[in-house]
Each structure stands twice: as structure tokens, then as C-alpha cells.
Image 1 (spheres, protein in one colour):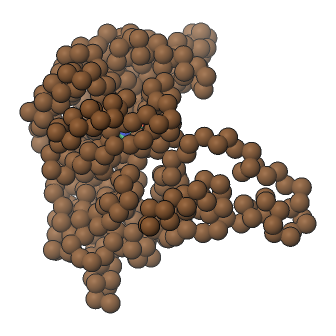
Image 2 (cartoon, rainbow, N blue to C red):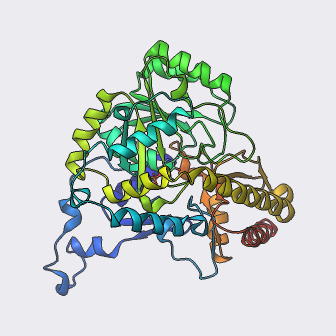
Image 3 (spheres, rainbow, N blue to C red):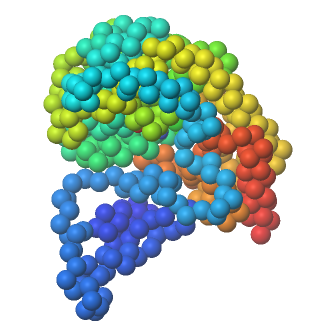
Length: 443
Ligand code: PMP
């Protein structure tokens, strides 16, 4: 069956025999052949067989997708609409430089030493204050900082999951989360997002599988842009409280609304202490800060801190002071409204350009916030095949199947990120997609 074939390829990839390149295909890895001594090349006889030494831990079959998205060799004039990136032109670099110089200039030597694993305390307080504005009552000891929210997700998986545990995820969902959960050996149960929140199916999963948690991105969802309504949020919390289900709420895009603020986070409705709220400054400010955070029970934070000590003692305190002085300077609200207005125009430009160049070949709905436009190809063309051709034409995106854990899902869907380029570039990207699609459906 197709699934057996896919699993065989994944096994070969895990063992280093083949490598999958997004939009291109699967290739035999030369070094794997050499390291196993089958190449007959005497020059390599003494090379370390590294791939044979790796621990046989569960690995996500998606492991290479994110890396490939960042590293894919693309034409110089390629328009990359794949990776979910804030536009570097929006980064508040001058004010960060000034604040950093002032803060570093008055720092005591101890400020360059270690800080608690849970995070830089003044920043934890500032984050707790920011959470209050979103209806989340958290004290500083209920907040922990991480090296990006990806680090928080990883640690959460380390402390909560054992191989064979079940985790519910939306389908489609954020690739980075799927990788972490699969890497911990979890079995994933998919809850489709396309027709509203299916609480009956979720309840069925809870009864049959007793999942460890439900990972959800309720606001400006990656990749579809969907927002869970207020009603759905209340109903979900009511169900979760009844079953004592842990909800991991990822709110990476909640601040990036283009009309009105979204409904309150699930954490603000948490009546039973079971919601773990995760957020990041990567989307609103810039990813190089590597600061994400989590708000949850101090008992969980204690355990996460013990686990974090194994890998990095604490997130960089220099990044944390810089963010702290930036938050204290009161500039974030202005920055947020600036980027919202820039990204809203970009969203509208991409939507308009796609309608112009692709017409009925593509369908999509316009998200009220976030970074992404989720498209469906209304022609007999898969998103993988379209990507393969589109890359030759100088434009890239993420094919939809990458966001699903079930085979044969999302084959006609794909994700554009509209925040990283100005309007004129987005128009050109849409033109290239339109040309590619027309060429492919004519042939
Ligand atoms: N969650 C979601 C939903 C994301 O889209 C991303 C970034 N793509 C992250 C978490 C990770 O962000 P970071 O590690 O940079 O904080």
C-alpha cells in the first residue's frame, strides 16, 4: 500500500540511506553508501560510520521538511513564500541597538552570569503584566521563558510524553509541533479544522485513547488562519474540564490581528488549571531573539526547569534583558500596530493578485490575522507537483500534506506566507503561480 511504501522511505531516510528534498524528490545519500563500506572506495575505508552510531530513538518523519524549507537551493530571484517569517525590514533594530547600548553600559558584572532556569525575573514579571491585558491571571512564578517557543514545546514533550502516548492535534497543524511529538514517540490523533471544532470527535478520542494533551493553535492558526469562535472556546474548555484534559494552547500569532482583537485565549477561560499557554516574540518582534514563554501551573514549570537544565541551564539572559528593556520602554504597542497595518496590506495584495492571476484555479479564504493564506487547488494538480514546477519558475510555498499526519491529506492544499515581502513582490509571486498552473493544466 501507499502507506507501507511511505513508511519504507521514512525508514531509509532515518537510517541515512536516502534524503527527501521538498518539491524535488527522494535521493540516495552517497555518504550512507560510503560509510557502510559498500562503495569500494579505499579512500573512505577509515571514515567514522556516524549514522550507525546514532541512538534508535523515535524520529519524526517530517524532520527534514523544516530544514529543507530554510536551506532549499533556490534561484536568486526566487520569491520565497514558504517559511513563516516576519519581514526583517520591520524589525525595530535602531531602538534595540540604543536600548542594548544603554542597558549593557550600566550592567553589573553579575548581569553577565547565570540566571534562574525559569527565566530572567524582571522579564517574567513584564510578561505576566502583558498576559493580564489578555485576561490571563498569571504571576511571575507561573511564567517561564524558553529559547523560542520551540524549546518550550520540546521540553513539554520531554516531561509529558512516553513512547506510545496519544496526543490530539489539529489537522492540518504546525509542523514543528508534530515533529516534537513524533520525536517523543507519541501517536497523533487528528482533529480536522476545516468544518469548525469537532467536539464530538474530540470526546470520542478522550474516551477511547486517553490522550496526554490536545495541542491547539486557536487564533490565526498555522497554516489555515482559522480563529476559534468564543462559543467554541467555551465549549472546548467545558469539555476539557470535564475530562481533565490538558490543553496546550499555542498563541504565536494572537497579536497579529488585522481587524479587531481576537476572542480571549483559552487560558483566560481556564477554570480547572489544565491549560498550558505558549507564546513567542518571534512573530511580533523577531525570531533571532529566541524568546518564547509559557504560562502554566508552577508544578509543571518546576519540572520543565529541571529538564531544561539538562540542555541549556537557561535561555540567554542578554536576550532576556534586551527584551525586558524594550517592553519597559513602552514601544511594543506602537510596533505592533505598525506591523499589523503593513501585514494587512500584504495579505490584501496577495489575495487580490491570486484572484487576478489564478481566478477559479485556486480557492482560499482571507484570514483575519496571522501570517498565512491557505489555498486549495481547484484543478487536477497536486501541491507537490505544483511546487516542483513553481520552483523552476522562481516561487516557493509549503505543500499542504506537510501539515498533516495522515497520508493522502492536503494533497491539493498549500500555504503561502504573505508577511515577508512587499506588495509588488507578492503580485509577481502570484503571477508566477498563475503562469505555472496554467502551463500545467494545459499540458
Ligand atoms: N508555534 C507556531 C504556531 C509557529 O508557527 C512557530 C514558528 N513557525 C512557533 C511556534 C515557533 O516559534 P519560535 O520557536 O521561533 O518561538
